Length: 136
Length: 136
DNA sequence: TTATATTTGCAACGCTGTTGCAGAAACATG
DNA sequence: CATGTTTCTGCAACAGCGTTGCAAATATAA
Image 1 (cartoon, chains in turn yellow, green, brown, cyan):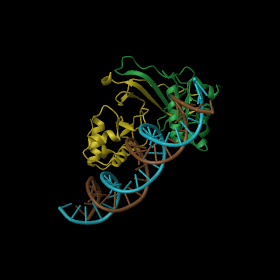
Image 2: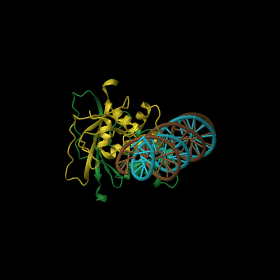
Image 3: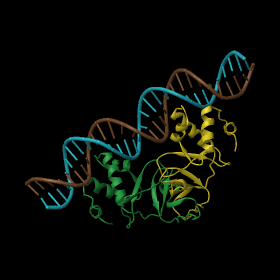
Image 4: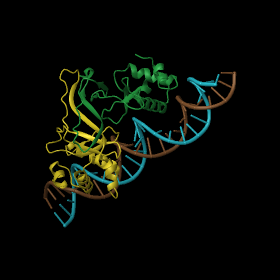
């Protein structure tokens, strides 16, 4: 796994303690994390800084939003190949109704959208809901 | 289309003007509507009443949440067969990035989830994002 | 018409997320 | 290593969505 500080430098971001910590937390988590999830792991940090940090990382293609149908933004690491220009994701997200965790899942094929539709399609999100391993 | 007042009676809900109006608005809309969308169509109504009305309708199986990846709840009519006990939906939702509208779409097959997964699956949501007919 | 149960509107609140601004920190340069 | 410039952080204030408690108003059953 690439060093957090290296990732920051690669994207022309200044290496600060908040950014390094946030990035490490997201790297080492198997779940997508919200601003609040991160805040709870810090001793002291301004939540506004976290919102801005997450937005910056997302813009740079370091992390991506894990859409899970709740009204809270959660983020997970991007695969390599994502950039400021475009995100390369075609995976679904699993949301556990019980513990409210959200996971990226790769073993689901996201279907193609019928071409004849009247809609111009850019991306497709899939949210699988149910119970995770820990909660069964 | 069934009369709004009939639908309310069928679900043991009192027929009030707010409920009738809300239900008519949702029935006649091709888009999923938020509390705010509804409020703007009223002369005077308390937004809290709208939130409660929507929640009641959802619980009763009259309307369903149209998950669209934004942090705002939107609702559309349920198909017949939905009830307090269970909602019968297997359709995707289209969200237009340009006008922020959300539509129910029926011509997409939602894939089955692989059984061997460690997750216990209850429902699957699909969100298609892009540009709608009006916005192209 | 009246009594009861339900619904509505108001007030207050909590949570998520944003913007503006001043001080602090990172880092490039000499 | 000192300095100046750029960027980041933290504070304050705010906006929007949604919820809860309570009293007044309304729908319905009797």
